[in-house]
Image 1 (cartoon, rainbow, N blue to C red):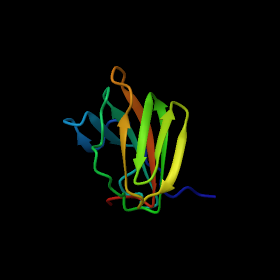
Image 2: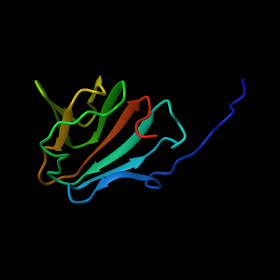
Image 3: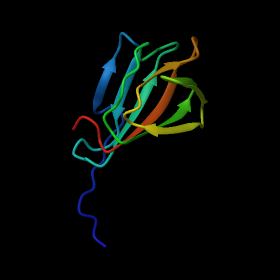
Image 4: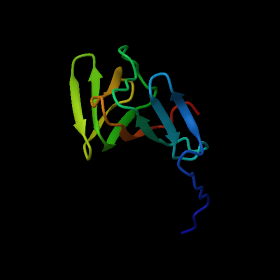
Amino acid sequence: MTIEQVEVVSFGSVIVGSNEAQGIRHSLLSPASNKLLSLTHTTMEPGASAGEELYPMFCESQTAYVLKGKIRIQFSNKVVDLNAGDAITFPGREPHTYHNLDGSKSAELIWVMVPSVGR
């Protein structure tokens, strides 16, 4: 078996969707050329929020894995609270938003979107 393409992406080398006003920073961890999936590391300042308005991501499936902190993901008919070590998978087109529940500590999570979003 031959590996045709291998690409290393360093943490923080590609910042996507950063919104300092919201206290959220997204670092792309998958190659920008990868159309199969997007892998993103998100850092949220204490109490940070993606906003009150629900929005979809234009992918088939989305997974969030919480590395640090407490995250709330809000859907139109459901609210899910996640702690470090928890993961959730849901349809990518499902409108949602998310918040760092801790007002004194930052949170970190990994997002996986299949297929890749925005490329």
